[in-house]
Image (tube, rainbow over all chains, first blue to last red; front, side, top):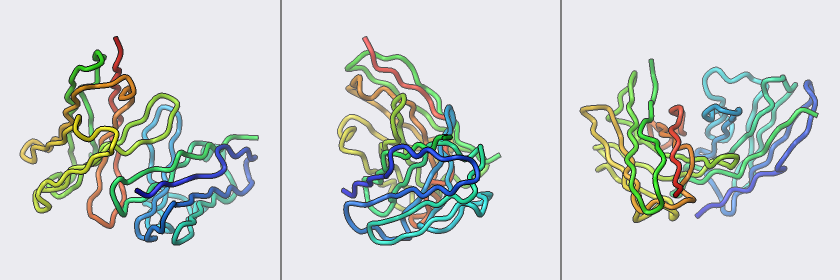
Length: 108
Length: 121
């Protein structure tokens, strides 16, 4: 199975700053099958990025994804107050389609 | 409206059984793969498994933590999928989400609101 490790566990930043979140896979993942989700308290997760770098419908262009192989990154430019949440990466290439443990983005 | 609505969550004793339902509307349910994801309180997301469409022989896959205890099924005529949970353990306590993937190369793009399963004596 492919284990995803996200870092950092918690990221403290201020609105207007840039956030860089990492997702590292225990074995190579095709870029086609790497997604990022955002989850706010009391809500279901929401798809942000799929195929490592494609934004889902309605996602602002301050969200971007990159990476390949075993290292993937979610970047959020010019943080808005509504961006403070928990972010998860997921590989959906092979079963089990595991999620990373999450990165909590909190207001500094 | 395109949506998934879970139901059936409840309080159940360890060793007991429970069946969750997930009703779909607003899209072609029969062509979609349905994945179940759970989340214990304050914890991360855990992929539980999936059931594919008829054209893919309703193939199922399960996380190791639930294999042999949980079973997926679906009724395409009712646009509904089910999760039968047997031999429940306290560690199965979580919010259970049903989700949709529309093609093998597409990600999960739709989530239900979740239903809470509590396993406790």
